[in-house]
Image (cartoon, rainbow, N blue to C red; front, side):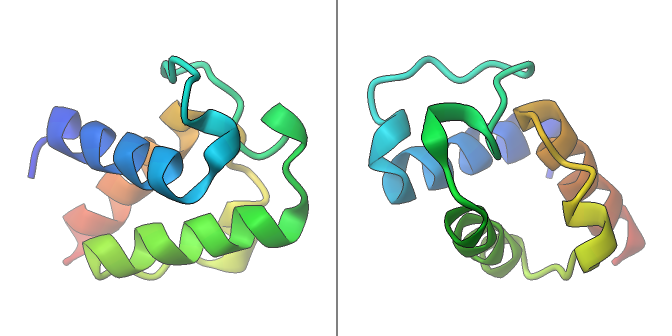
Length: 83
């Protein structure tokens, strides 16, 4: 799976599971974990959805480093490369 496909899937997961982002244009520098007033539980919920979609596991310590769409896609690509 290439980066563009991963990005599209991640954006779809975000828009589907976070109504706050339904009408927001999400770009690589869009802050996901603090934008639109998301709390930590909501961010965890979305990250679990992303892990499930790609059949990957992201370490909790790495979640703390993910702020933007780019950060999330980078981490997904890294985990996919390990498979």
